[in-house]
Length: 371
Image 1 (cartoon, rainbow, N blue to C red):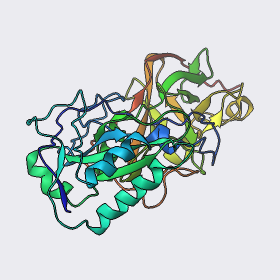
Image 2: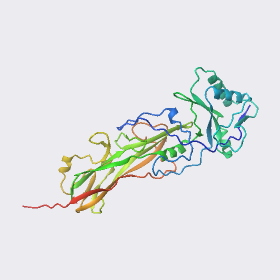
Image 3: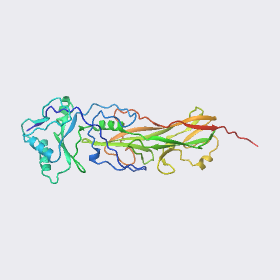
């Protein structure tokens, strides 16, 4: 017998479920704990709300095929066995909308193909396995009638093994990896600038450099990693039936805005972007790594690794921004930062920088006297 989906077009599905690694640590080469297949399974709706702030991306049309749960290893397998033997139909699940009241799938007669025979054999094996394996059978259906031909090239049923207690009951789309990367991009929560630390703290002097550091704080449900070069990044990863995708957002530069055109900024990325711990060791810092003693030895007109030199006295509002760049790869995250084959996220626009509030800098005039 040959089998095809008939009038099984699901148009409403669940909210996007993306995985977040439960244990991230600050430090080079530490990728944290990875999600299991169960917790990372991202059966999802294209219209899910973004988790990040201002992560603009043009999403492609919804994927053509969706996966609808049929039952666990026992009940689902028995339903599939009955279906292939021509004595049962697979009913449309409750809570989903179909333009037709017809059964989701019906047998059409004829010889059983190799793919269908493999599904039937797997169902028979699972149905008799004791104890009952944890997992869920899914039925592949089309998102719209026009997509049916594409879904006919996929297996009619897919077995998803589960982990832990209980069976998977997630409904959603078979998302192409590029589309999944775009969805992950929308979920990125970039670090924020928690504080700006100046040295000297009280008052600065004209023509003498003021060192600038910023403290990064993780975004909501996010953690900070460091690349092998010590540059901060965050990562989002998820897995569907079609594979895993990972999106990386890496700090790309620190911009100092001194609040007056009569100042020189020292914000070269090679100097400002190497992360270092705060004095208490709990916070990732960017910016100057020069000590107070080193700063005291810098004379008028001298250079600094990261900061600003004011030419005129006064009070100025200084702000600092950290820029970010994003890319994605097919597969799970790896340690040490984005790999060499990381490519731009499809349809993504530039990430918004993390920007501090204004910090008042009081600059006094100093004069040199001879004799």
